[in-house]
Image (cartoon, rainbow, N blue to C red):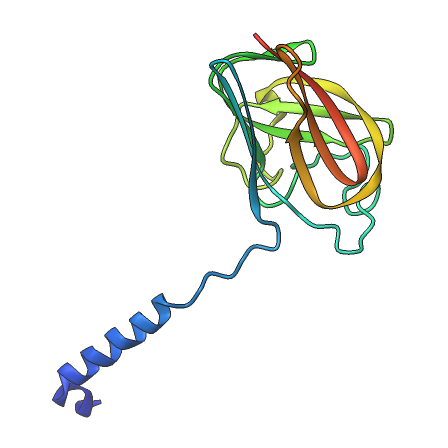
Length: 179
């Protein structure tokens, strides 16, 4: 131990070199990478931030993601939607702001939940009392298998579009109108 105090400069240099080597290590990529879906209509901007889990040979709906149970709608952090102007989703108005999106997948339809609490990890601190509104969305089957969970907007037709949640061979369709 006394030898360390004899050569303080050497100890200092070894620590600095060790820190520099550690700082150069690359970050390990997430297995469910972060992604965004965005759309602009006139002066209205909508952005959805979510994590994209992959199918990886698993059966998704009714298995990995159980039917009739709350889901964070992706992986890792809860999915969030941000809009700078109010929009109509289904028959409900979503005011400007940022909200978490949770879902309850079903075989024929899904319950889509917009919740005031943001910055949540998964569903662990989900609280129903902060729900802004819920809506039922239709489910369609796709002809192709989607490997990663995907959120995207459809084509803009006049002041309308659709929001899609797609994974495996399931496509959930949510109508949106720009106000």
